[in-house]
Length: 342
Image (cartoon, rainbow, N blue to C red):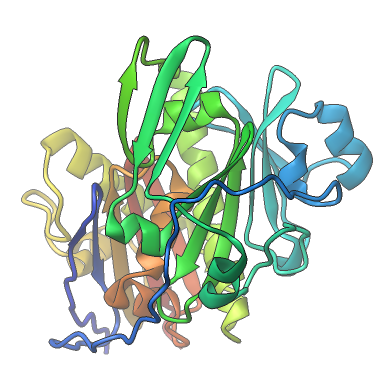
């Protein structure tokens, strides 16, 4: 007997996410959060040469010499191309290259050198050595920019400046450890705008991609969400999910429907609930679940948002699921999880 059980958890922290996980739980458990003390002192640069964070500003040849040919190259919304290294969950990383220069790096692999930090490092360990301010201010090409972090930002994704490198720490709120790390140059940070921004002068923006490139960007985000979700599952001792093309088509259809009809919900006014959409898509399953998100700057940010919400987290870490399909349309993201019928 097929079944889909519902929990809807909506979190609005500049973004929107919602989930239909496998198990019903109408009362969110209170999660004990360890308090961190933040300082407004400026952190001195201490990124080691071996750290992938030191790649910012380097030539793409430096990346090739160190890591070899990427497993895949994806387009991004911000002009750079993602070099994807996914040979194993423990070494998973993405390196953003624009005009032959590294402008961003991201990793969730716990064997990747991200000195002065480490994946799975506790919040207390990080804050003991790294003062963090809720404001990051800098000048770029004669313009002044200041990013302001909310309390939630400080807890989940604080930003630390190391001269011309900006490091974003994604924390898992349920373990109080670093889940993943992103670093970028000033131009890329301004274009992505992951926090509230005030500026004086010119506000630079990424060029709008062509329709063909936009489709490639969406496909890349789908694959990255799939890859990163599996890294997270392996970290928690769970099986990796296989790709479901049928579930992916249903997920893409829902993201497109939400975008085109300007709504954000698991129930489509036109195509109905998840069960209706899976049935219409010819997807055979025993159990299923769905996560949706909107307005995140990319798939990485969407996954980290899901990880920090109890309902979405349960769907991502459900041991019963064995397949996943992902569908992205611009900044609308849908994950459809299924357990195939035995």
